[in-house]
Image (tube, rainbow, N blue to C red):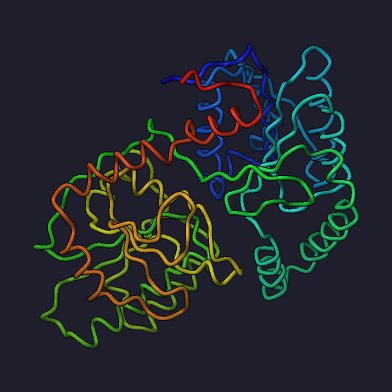
Length: 397
């Protein structure tokens, strides 16, 4: 049965994200899906985020207003606080959903303090954060971006100064792992969601002409695409030219892309790997339809994580596209029959094992995967959990 709202309720969604930044394309889609799901469940959602150099407020009726913002991180967050204060002058929000930035600071806590009287939920996209922060610092140091490194270190100092006060201004933390508390605040454990409206039809393609793997991401080291490339090199060395043809499509940009290109050349598999750049719409549909296997997250261990609710795994399920992965996921069981679980280390992916996996799939795998995604992995399902937990809606059953 459809959940019912206990009353008409207002939600403020705040995201310190530039949704026009190509690097944030996946995050922007996620936020749009969250807002849509909250609205479908009866919430009037006011959505605040960045768009380029403007702070954009989208009202529940779809009207938008934009104001200019400062470029410095602290100035930018101060502009967010000013905008939130203006919104609070003429309405009360029953719930605030804030996507947590990598670090907290007094301005973030100030925004949450201004919203006292609302149920303040901090969404924690990744937890624990220490591996992500360590990787960021390492990348900045290795690329000699010392000014940015100093800014990041200052942000960390402000974060640790702010931590003792976080519990007083946060009512719940939404997390995608199984932590019972974060920052001393009780959690609502969720799994990442998807929007059914984003479904891209995936047509079956046999292995008669070869195997195509596809990875779609803002490419980072923790995606582990290098494991597939080194696996291709081993496969070619073991089987020779008479083997089943295999290729790897890498869709997207990112800091790891140049490293992967160099690895392809060094391993002698540049002819087997295609870098398409970012794709969307029909070109992305065609790329998906050319593949039999999606490449999920294969390097989560590199940032100290064993579990993550990766959006890409959910998109593959919605598409009916079998995939390979090496992490654990609270929303998808480890023994999911349409995913090949690889070792959580840096070893090359066994391409022969991937081929055998594809050959073992039942005929109805696409419809079964799609149905699983619709039942378990949509944002509507996740926010039903949130709203029921906070007594904003009730289940009439």
